[in-house]
Image (cartoon, rainbow, N blue to C red; front, top):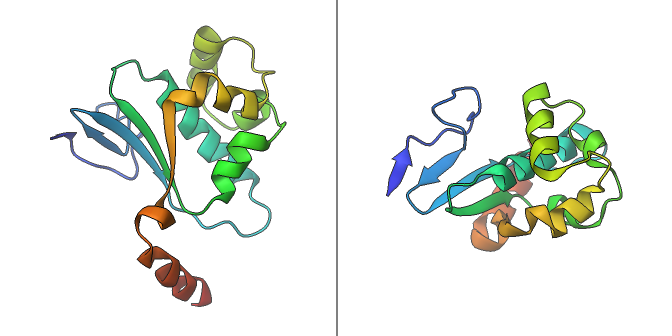
Length: 140
């Protein structure tokens, strides 16, 4: 059962910290398409991973993305959490250090340790029709 009204702009309202909340899961959605220089998108997907990893409600945590690139980035990059969160709020950076320690940890190491409880899901695998829709949208 949905426990909070869904919002793809979650985080702006303290009563809705996640894009989707049910009695069994919390989820974030990153539906942007990768096109070259994606530092801000990479930082955003990492910040969402951290936000989900910080959740201590006991619910399943899921991060939905479009394509394998964001998942590959989270699992393989040597960029540090400091780099990944350097455009995030001071509050999130503080919560990170309180819960996980130093921001010098590589993002890939964070993903395989503290972030390992967060399920990384490629929406294209769940909704194959998205591939054709997104191809049309990128041509417009």
